[in-house]
Length: 160
Image (cartoon, rainbow, N blue to C red; front, side, top):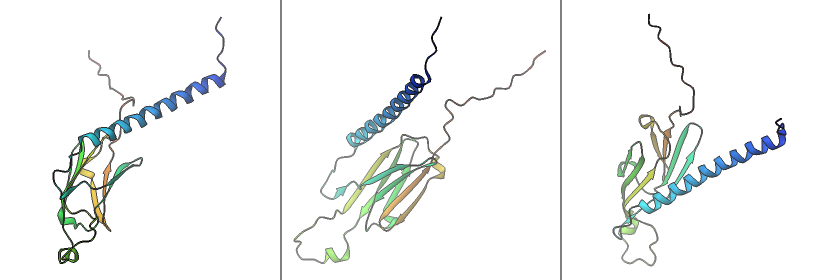
């Protein structure tokens, strides 16, 4: 004779499974970020840098925000593939700094920049949009609908 499992134990098991799934997703994101950091191009010279980015996910899209103050849109090259987004270009010295005879402090970065962001989502490349507002480049990558795990009806052909 089997004993009935109390509802409290059953629901706690479901909660534990849910929490384990969340931890697995967070760990996967952490390893993806570590992999991106290890694969990042090292600065080859004094005048190259990698802009800071924020990556946000909503239900329908992935948003990438890159800090590019003082960079004009025509100086930025943006390419998107199924696996990564590449942002590269040039940040030129402003007219005020090039006329200076000596610098007492120079903390802003100039020169070539390049940043690769690995994509861990299935995105619609053709629906990607980008805009530059007040030195922040926003890239919106619409997500593709994930069809894994969804039942698919298969028609049955009748042959005689």
